[in-house]
Structure formats: C-alpha cells, structure tokens
Length: 435
Image (cartoon, rainbow, N blue to C red):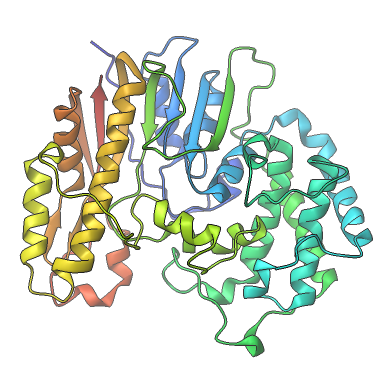
C-alpha cells in the first residue's frame, strides 16, 4: 500500500511568491509548498521518475529536481515550456548571468536588420519598439543558441533543445514584454487584449526596453538561490519539452509518481493569456490559421470548437454524461450547440489524458491531481467527481480525496453569473490515485 502523502492547501497565496516561483506569476497551478510536501511524503525511491503532463510554469519539475528525482514535464504551450526550463537553471550559473545580459544587449545593438519579416510583437508595439524587443531576442539566440543562424522558435524542434540558461533570458524578456503591455491586460488575469487601431500601439524607447531587461535579469538573479536545482547531485535530472497530454512520448510503465493539475473546465483561454510571450517566440497572436490559432484549438480546455469533436462515451462515466445531458437541456442560448460541443471536447481530451497517465505509470505508481469544480450557468460541473469516476473506470484506485475551499475563481470577476446562482466560490480537491 503506498504511503499517504501529506497535502497542504495547493492554492497559491496572494502574497508574491519567493525565489524562482516568483519569476513568473502564473494564475494556474499549485504552490511550491504543496508540491514539495506531496513529493517528500510519497515514499519515493531515489531513482523515482516524477511526471507532470500539464507542467505549466514548472512547479512540479523544479521541485522534483531540487529533491534529487528524475523530473519529466510536458506542456503544449511553448511559452510555458520556456518558463519551466528557466526554473531548472543551476544556481552555480549565477556569477555569469550579469555579464551574459550585457553581451546579449551589446549583440542586440549591433543588429542592423531584424530576423523576422513579419513581426508578431507589432500587435501591441509600433515597429521601432517591436524591433528593439526582437533584437534582444535575437541577441539571446546569437549568444546562447546559435552564433551563426537565427532559429524560428515557433517552428521546429529548437525549443525543446533550448538550454536552461537561454530559457532564463527568454523569461526575463517575457517579463519585460508583459510589463510593457500591462494596459492591455484587463481585470481578468487570463486574458490579453490588443489595441483597437495603430494609434493606440505602444512606443517605448530602446533605452527604456533595454534598461527594463537589465533590471529584470538582476531581479531574477537576486532570487535564484531559493528552490535551486541541486547541481552537485548526480541523481536528479530533468526533461521538459512540448507534448500533448493525450500523446505522451514515454514508454509503458515508466513513471513512479505523477503530480499535476489539468486545466479546469472553466473556459480559460491559456493561449490568449500568454499571447505576448508567444509573440516573443514568433507566434502571430490572434491569427486563426497561424501557429497561434492551431495552439488555441489544441489546448485542453480551449474555448474554440474544431470541425470534429468527440461524441459522448459511456467510458466517461455516469456523472459526466449526466452533466452533459443537463447542459444540453438548458434553456440558455447556445447550450445545445457551442457549449455542448466545447464540453464534449474537453471531457474527451481529459479522458484520453487519463488513459495516457494509466499507460505510462508503473504498477502501483501514484498520481496526485489537483482539480476544481465549476458551474455552467446553474448546473454544477463536479470535475473532481467526474475524474474520480473516469480513473476508476480505467482501473486506478482512488486512495483519498482532500477538499479545500477556493474563493478566488473566474466567477468572482464575472458579473454575468449573478442571474444563475449566488455562490461564486469553488471547491478544489486533491485526488490521490494508485495504478
């Protein structure tokens, strides 16, 4: 019988996170304290392989690596892959980072032409300002990726081979770009707007952008010591790359422990939420037929509905099918069309992901999943109960379910929920499974 992990509340506090966890404030995911307590108390062997198939900002992989385990993380969103890679940087690299930042800026000033003919950053910035940001990105590549050629990180496999140190500087540039477009991020922290027309585009000077990049690098260096990778350990290693949770590039029975939180069924568009970071990587934002549009349609929980989507399957369990039936019968507009399709797409992808987890987990391996319920209008969408039923149908054993109240939800910033219900809080659950 697996040892029962100790679960603290997974929700991040409102206070800024310390150390590397504070490098990139991320709405989704759980706290580093929760990850550390879950992994430490799981009774894992020294050679254990810890997986997060929805790795996000990399809390699981950074924590598992710092504890000396083999960390594996996948995410379809390339911006989040970069963030997760940056958090794995060895602490001993600290002494070289300031001088590397100076070299990157020096290299960026030498660039006479910019490496992209179409500039995604011009969505928010005037051409000259967008060019300064792109020149810094090209400088990172010239110093830390390839001294001879510029690589389009929006295509190909270069991103998966990006070093932790290159990812560190990309993350600094992400932060600068996000800070500059703050006026286009509304109350909802998971959305990003664009200017109505060219007159409203941003025009920060080259000196301003370069100074903010230097300041951000120094700020990150100041927090590098907390949650650091144990570089002296020969036991721990990590692999973080892009992959779908429904098609994990792992062999059967390979993983000892899964710690993750899939995107909740709350209609958050994670591609739009990271639009500026994706633009830094070369993805044209808000373009339906671009790499950005394809990413939006592929992410679990997407608000888009493709031409083909799954029919409801008995394998999804009685709770899931009952919820979908209630949704289809709801009187509100588009319940039986758009919303039914999007929820069927969500649960079809989620079930496929759970199938993959079951495949890659070793016999008696453990999985800890953080899930949150929600509502469609006035219909309770009990995601934790649905996942529990799906997991049991796949032959997994539910060892425990631990509930935590959550008052910070998207419903709390959405006034349109008022006609349907008084409650705006939610319940977050930690589900502990065994293969």
